[in-house]
Length: 316
Ligand SMILES: O=P(O)(O)OC[C@@H](O)[C@@H](O)c1c[nH]c2ccccc12
Image 1 (cartoon, rainbow, N blue to C red):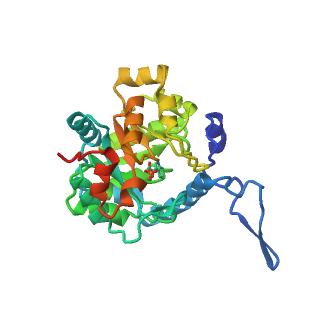
Image 2: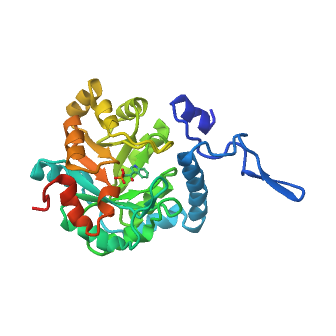
């Protein structure tokens, strides 16, 4: 079966690449775009994935896997991402915070003009974040691997999640060489076999995998994969940008919530959390960690933004 067919049999709507070549067709002196013939991305997530696929194939030429494997020898050691979340949850009685270093997003535009990633990271750490998430996609989120590397090199102790659109195992090695402790795997993009394979590589590299789901079908697929320890529920639909924090609650009700508790999987509530009431709502739903960007990165002092988000100082 072709890659896109395997994916669609699992309910994945995102195609990994344009089905029939590049979108521009040269016809005599005219260049035009053929709409709706399979070569136009159907939504923003698909556009990002197509772009990432091209970006990675170029990067791979410059830095083949063999050179990354060598660079691993000099990479800073991987730290315990889940341990940090558990410890914070036990210490505060509130969900452990993964604070996101995020300059912009396709749905919200620029979030912060004067953006100093190291300063923001240090402020988050001081404010009581357990872990940090660093956007590395340049085109859509104005992030970079330089930011990730700089934060790691500045001595920030919070474990770091490389927030990237992973479509190729090569990216796992790359993230690790840049100092990542964890990576994001998006179930809306990756078929089961890719997730299984990537989780194995993550374990080999000492990376924690945060596997992200948005609906019941994705959640059930991920629960059927062995060795899953950390699952995020994204309240934002990456295809439509629709945001609804009741998704976290809906997915954790009933049987699924029971399985999570039995297996002691840490659930992360992601996106759209702005107030202490939002935090209490997702905690009540069953999450032991939250991933927050917008509401704290926009504050002039992002560390203090954490106190407003939780309704109390969680740094002590
Ligand atoms: O800024 P917010 O609404 O607090 O969201 C943070 C984080 O959940 C969001 O950036 C995110 C979650 N999953 C993603 C996948 C790709 C890009 C971004 C994301």
